[in-house]
Image 1 (cartoon, rainbow, N blue to C red):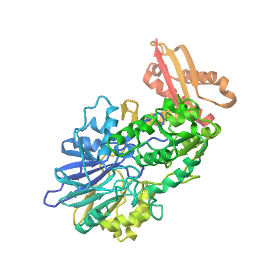
Image 2 (image 1 turned 90 degrees about the horizontal axis):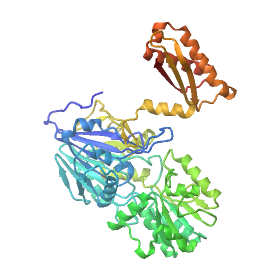
Image 3 (image 1 turned 135 degrees about the horizontal axis):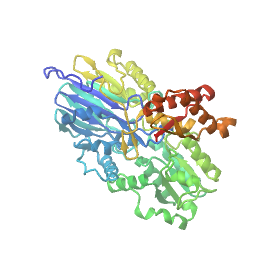
Image 4 (image 1 turned 60 degrees about the vertical axis):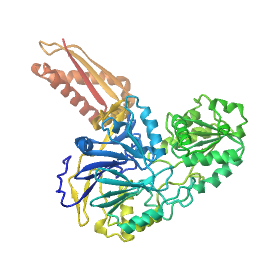
Length: 562
């Protein structure tokens, strides 16, 4: 594997597509575009860890390739403000001082994230407007309005000497958007007439047939549930889904309810969206959370974070009875108005059960249509392909099965199979008007964020944490004579989390005997080599556990010389 593919001569115009995240996974979106004269990056997102990544807060793309080419890096462009597209920006800005281009709402959300990282200097933010062109080095970017589950999203037409690439970002074709900012089909069709070298397209819902539903489809179910709710209504949704916040607020106000917000990201995003004109709630209809108890329950709606069952979220604290201002009880109606992100099913089920035990009535997507996807289904994807008629097609933003299905859809829509490429993160796809080449992969992968540590946690640490969680830890302390290698003190054995049925009470004595037997068999000279002796003790006890108990605890020998 090489980090820097060899460059061609400038006599043959080419552009390289290098995904650094977002392929084979839902999240961590980051794609580099490269010509002989520079590199630009589109999106810079995070991936949220699943339960087996113990102690990990966030996952961001491995940026090694960008670091090795930092002198050629020109800019970062953002399609929209979801975490899987902007969440890694604070970590990006620690390494690179380049301008960041995005629409006003997207940049407003970025500013909020950057402020939380106080050591970062103010970023160079450049606000962009659809249908205007922005030239950076050899690239000209034209934002094109799309519709998604967040306001102010755009696709990018990326114009280079080799041709035009259309990077959709996340999209669906919503012909009746909440904000009346319409999907720009006219410009996409005209780009198709002008000629598109390659389409890079959202694959999330490629297995879903038909057309995506409009966000307006949610209004009627919300109206029905909120109008019929006997007491308080608590709506948990993504704080970035400004359209959903607007829908809930409008319906609630029509039904004589005041609006309260809880959760840091909910309060921040609503404030930013309101200041920029993307969210309109009359000030006299908003109340503070500590004022909720002053109103009859049937006159209050609370917008909260926690739709994914996040342990520190406001809704989770309500479910536990640990929220400062809100106690859940009979008469409360809870609406989970968000899709379930894969991997969060267990946490969401837990919070639903906790809320139900407190007497609340809980509605979620399995039993009511209070959420629609923001991603294109098959018919939307077909229409995107037919509007643009690209020469080459690369599915992006999805797991392998979703990428493969999107590729099949593209072939059925008329793109030659040999011009469709299902690639992986790190693959370098080099395009010209006449040929496609796959170069050697560049360094790619995942960087773990653990507290303030960036990339400090490696796979071995994760495996150790998993073993600690499943099989426990064994510590062996032995003091040996520096002259003779004989045992002076110990061995003292302690265990934590090691449960071995009826032997649990005797385990320390059993392990002590095992260590003593091992040390008695060793030559005195070996006992004087502390580092080697640690390895022998570790390996002996690990074999003993595996052979007798089929367990694999973390074993830590501590050998002292006296």
